[in-house]
Image 1: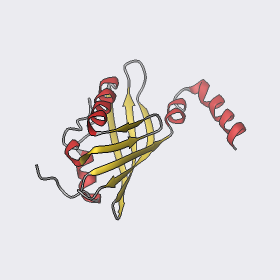
Image 2 (image 1 turned 30 degrees about the vertical axis):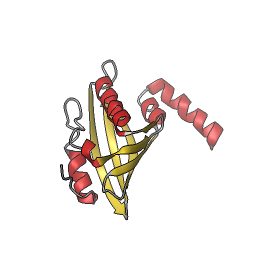
Image 3 (image 1 turned 135 degrees about the vertical axis):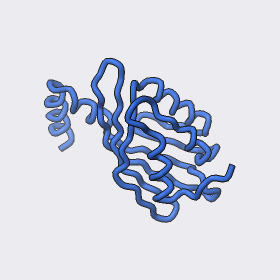
Image 4 (image 1 turned 90 degrees about the vertical axis):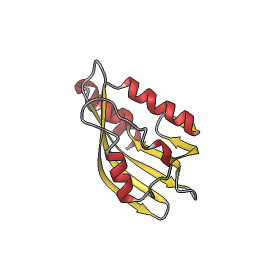
Length: 146
């Protein structure tokens, strides 16, 4: 399979086909763009290898009632592409929760993604949706961290 060159436009187009407003995401069209030796890291995990990465994507889709992403910005410098996004996750017993974050994709010499790093404040964005806990969580962060 010949893959399209990854750049700002192609990333925006490919990722916009991944998420929908109802139901589960489909990443199958993205997997060919990932290196077999992909290193993925986010706030809670580090995964090495394409098979493990694909399994992680499947677990996320299984856990969520629905999942969608709004891409706000996509920029590129050399072999690095940055995406800014809002991902809204919905679980069975809880209201939809927006997570605000960004992704750094590093493109390897073969044109595939060899590294992906996602940045987001998982707990802060979740706790912002819990009225009583939000106030105490933010007060704790201010007291301890500034």
